[in-house]
Length: 566
Ligand code: COA
Ligand code: ADP
Image 1 (cartoon, helix red, strand yellow):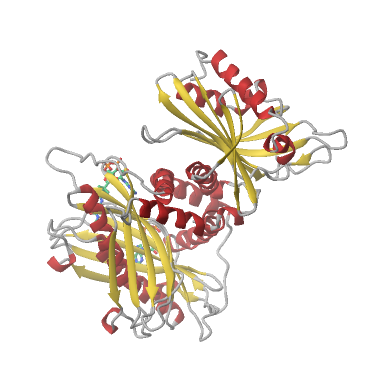
Image 2 (cartoon, protein in one colour):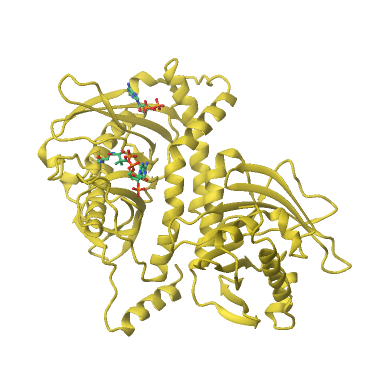
């Protein structure tokens, strides 16, 4: 968030005389002692995961008013290690509650007590589920976002949940398609046999590892998994490994006091500067069969004295499962890179046109929708022009000009959504759309279109856009319908001589049902060089062509309000 927005939030709090504090916020501070650290004097990631899980669980329980369990923790990237003597500060708060599950945001910072300096270590999102009662599944109360940043997290939480729930299925599909394209495993001289890195360890779940409901803490299981993964990584490099990232943890089933937890780890693949260790946690009691509790993939590096990653020995996989995991680790590395490149970049750092491919589809779609949600959650828009209740607003941000057009139509939101989300219909009301064709139906919610627009002046060529349109229905009554648009590149559609390639960084519609037959439509866009010629005279107050386009849009929607599209 920009600092002036933070200031605005603080001011908002001060006007009422009280400093606002999120009611679900829970803080934990711990001094890192030698008993929490490894032999290099760095806090063990397992201990940190336990603290993060407890803080987040207390926040979830504060909102739910009942006992909660960890369902999953999204990918975590650790930016720094933490030395003995430093203080770890953890803040957790519930971003959004769904039916029985909640997303909890967790921020970890490290503090040097002698200099007062603080720095971010990692940021994570965990999902907690309220424990079922005899009456069945718990229906949680909603979270009421108060500040702009809470509103943003509330809105983004729905998109992250969507990604989380399809994550496993998409990753499985991607792995099977990408590994079939990989040839034989490369043979490296001096490669270490994977068998040398295999670890198997058992833990008995005792009362200190569980809550008062006798369920094992998720953080404790993650800590045991991190422990065996670290041993496995050490066996490859015979040096001290540093954990960089953990892919999403998903707790498939519960574990209780008295369970024996069997933890197995092996290095799946070693690249030049990093290795992937896979860990599997299974539980049993007495003679019962093993229950699969969790599987995780962790990326380690080995840092030299200047904290630069060292070159690692390569791995020689075992036959069958080993070879499959070796190839899957290559595919996961690509997926992780895509994720880092597309999601973790700040919005204004993401290059305008990202090449589309099946392995980054999930993240591009997320990026498309979340960028529009972030625009939608922004306040301080300036009303620039208004005609017959169609309003044009602008907002300057990081030297970019954002604009939005707002209007109401007497058409139900769902029908409006169906009519506007089919871009091939847009030329019926928008004179800037000359041609529009579907290039690819990536999935049910994501379509790639080629759109051409006419030239603005005699000297110019027309423009051509390759647009990814991502559609979302509301998660609950407070969410709008959403159609997000952004440019992508496709090898099958390179730029041509005939047209100038136009770029859309973030645009789209949000549609909110105000009552059963009236919808509020908001159109957002950024005035990039490709868009500016169409809007600059409106923004300068010299024309109101935005009004003609949106009046035509309103007529189009009214005329088709009973059409069969929906
Ligand atoms: N990530 C995030 N949330 C998930 C999820 C995942 N991978 N899988 C399911 N959920 C959510 C669902 O969306 C649902 O949320 P909602 O009620 O708000 O819609 C909620 O979990 C319950 O889902 P439901 O379909 O009713 O149950 P399920 O059979 O999928 O079980 C768990 C989900 C999490 C309850 C179950 O897998 C479990 O008990 N896991 C072990 C949890 C545990 O004990 N953790 C501590 C360490 S062992
Ligand atoms: P997959 O085999 O598809 O990767 P699993 O859930 O079976 O998924 O295992 C997750 C990871 O745990 C594996 O990638 C592997 O690294 C590790 N693992 C699984 N089984 C063993 C085992 N018997 N010994 C050592 N490590 C194992």
